[in-house]
Image (tube, rainbow, N blue to C red; front, side, top):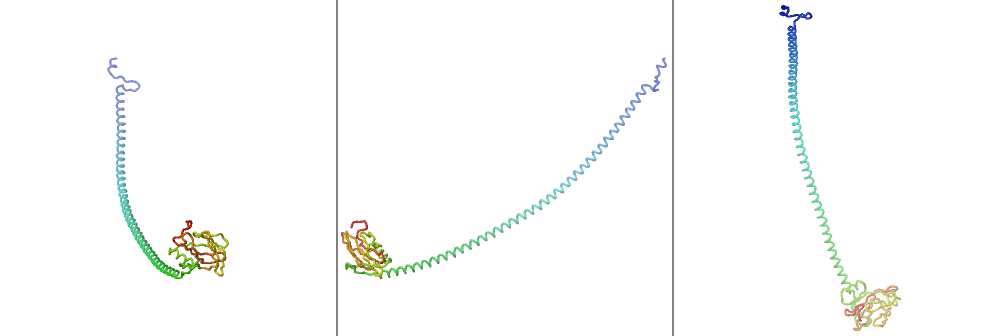
Length: 281
């Protein structure tokens, strides 16, 4: 029994002692750990190598991309510079063209204004010449009118009225009468008398035509003045018919200038001192 307790007891199943089994298990575990560690170290190394390769590749890619971007940027700058130069040239060309166009327009405007000025001057000169011609013609007309007026004055006659009183100038026409009116020596009143009409007021008297003979230029009329009727019978054209009227015994003179079928026209001449129509005789 003592010999059995002093020596290792071997199991019948394994033929190994427990201590030997534990040592083998420890060795196996160490080997396994070493193997796993080596595997993980190898895997980690592989990953590190792959990561370094990836980093190198990325560095190369970044470098290439930077170089490509630099080339593209340079090309872009060159393109922009070229385009800017072209734009400046176009701008200068546009400014030059616009300036040239404005200068042409200014010259055209100046030429047009000068042409219009010449035309206006020519027109004004023509109008001035026309006015001078008209003034000359007017002067000629005035001289002719003066000559006609003088001729009219010379045609006026002095006559003895039916009262054997020296008459003033006798008007034979309307122009003669206008001349006498402008002289201002006497008052003149025109009239038209129709046969069969009521007495017609003329100045401060009334006249009434009784007969008219156009062929013989003779007539008969009544003069109503101072509440009495004076008959002027069988009288002729341009014959001065005279009568006195009013408180001052003013000499009135009546002249018939034309005789028609049933009417006569003429004028009444009164002194400047005679009463005016509507006044007291």
